[in-house]
Image (tube, rainbow, N blue to C red; front, side, top):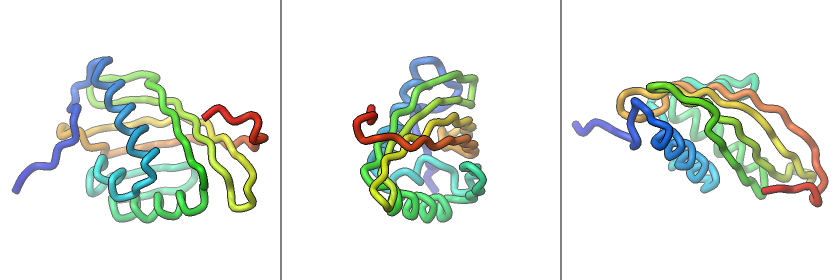
Length: 138
């Protein structure tokens, strides 16, 4: 059985941490739940706002529902800090809700990776801000 790996692998350098963040941003902007889920361990643990998501199957379901509700989604992530197998990012994303109103979400995520480069823990703190279309940045 081949061991699943997601490069770059820890321990992270500044360069590889930035690469990992960019890969995550690109994957999330694809809005492909299956693709995104492959970056996580099969038993990954998430806290997303007040919701807890456990395992890849729940990740796929969570992201499928998310992107059905959040139209014209666009995300930007920025490396905040890193250690051997952990990365902290700040992010913002914009989307339109079901009523067509624009929202900008801000937040921070803490990520922990296993030795194969798969994210085993993701903790996200997120705040939403209604914006006018003219205030969009992404």
